[in-house]
Image (cartoon, rainbow, N blue to C red; front, side, top):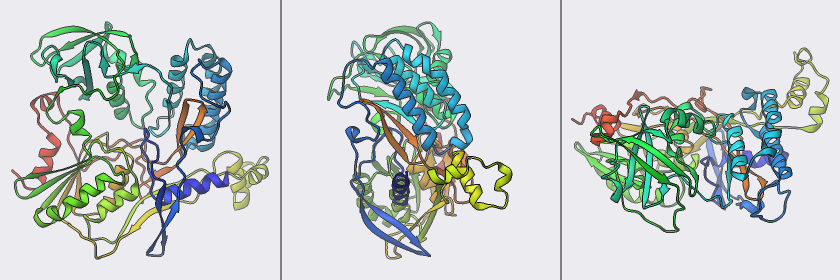
Length: 505
């Protein structure tokens, strides 16, 4: 356990805040230690453990045969144990509540009709924790699809003000179902009823994010599953189409038509610079992963620095990366040499101290720090001392400090939220958009069965003043919501507000 805690502390110290759906890619990273006001850097080796090396292997090898009732019960028990031991917010969720949920699942998982039903049961269990960084995933060949359908259909959906809207569709189907069409029903069920069932299986930190993710995967099903989808076109006419889930072909590219500004490739572009009147530069940053994103920023920065009188930093749909890289980006947008960000802590355990606390009562802990600590260990309530994320940069670096507006939405998460925590003390910066995803934290991966893994959030993260944002999202200074009319007209209301705040007419 001490080794595990050391690893968590190391990853946090280097600022690793991986997204819920991504493995940690670096083999080497930079360690950070703050000594007074001086930052010390060192290079350390961090092993990259692939699926086959994940801790917790009870069955050797990879099997394509269905999981047995015995294996399913083991996987459930393993998930229960690792969450109980590692989940950073278990003190708030409640150990007894978690134990009760585990007991309620013992019979259902063994009676599941197939592996897919069992997998969805575990998804639903994880979703109860309400944390996007705590999830179930598989590497089995479940033939499923969420956006690809027979007869050349590709369909992406988005949530706009409570409406389920087509954001992108195969080009040769756009006349039948134009982008901007609203989904009304699936298989004869109103779309809200259908979504309600999907949301029970979605791991998310806020209700807003849960709905967005549910909309994106509302048609996820096994290949060959038919769905009757009723929709209303932007012109008001209604129609129904039969969609049959199909397996995507490797390397397949389908020409699509999308709502302006809402095509998949455009939303998830790594980096882009767009100029607006008054020498306002908008920097679209797709992630804070090391590598090509930072290189693109580094290459573009001299030109931006020489021309820009104001900046817009677009962090919408930025859900990946490390807090260290987020700090690197921000260091070029402020003259401050010391950036102080979020505060984090993690759960800790000592078996010997726990044994000493087995007979202790709350009254025994008053005025006795040793007994109090032993009592906390025994009751799974012990935490490490809070650690502050802090980064020092040389004065000689290139800096552009000008009025800056940061665009955010509910897909701004993980390292991007750490960027916002670091930027919170910058008087020349403000935020526009909607509350962020509220999902920062470091993920520990465990194998439950060959081909089945769980991720568990191991860090409790807060603003430096103790204010919470995980589970809530970071509220922008100016809230701007998209409307159905806006997105159909290609209007970016948040961007327009940012330009207005910067004095651009």
